[in-house]
Amino acid sequence: MSDLQPLIEAMNDQLSAEYQAVIMYIHYAAVVVGPHRPELSGFFTREIAEETLHAQYLADKVSALGGTPTTTAKPVPHSTDAKQLLENVVAAEIEAVTAYANIIRLADEVGEVGIRVQAENFLMDESHHRDETKKILQSWR
Ligand SMILES: [Fe+2]
Ligand SMILES: [Fe+2]
Image (tube, rainbow, N blue to C red; front, side, top):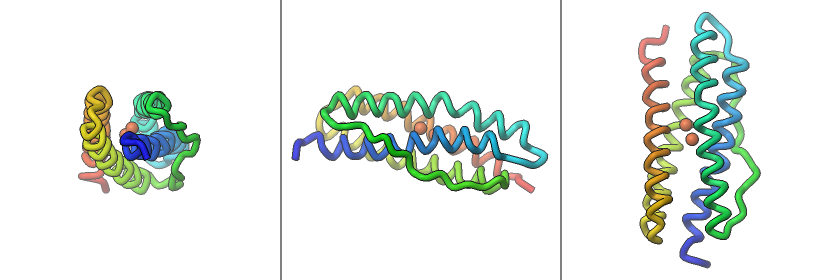
């Protein structure tokens, strides 16, 4: 097993989570109902481009490191209930933050500084999504 294998596997696992995020935000923007639909549909839609960039970067780097980028997305839990969708988003973003923290650690171990720096940027993106979504839920009634 090459030194790079743990990093490749962690990035590939996060690639399937980024594909999940793209599908999740497209799906949730489409299906969310209730009085807050206009804001929430826009809120979900605005995340699609960033999650797509995350996926593109990971696929490119997995390939560059000698791996085969996954074509599988993790499953997206379906609901039409706005509060449930927001809670699903918070859970997914918390997982993404944890995953990038792990990728940062593994990239450091093999001296892949560029990947570490990009993973730090993505961790910032994911923690911002998480915190913005938590704020929406804070005074939910
Ligand atoms: Fe992401
Ligand atoms: Fe995200």
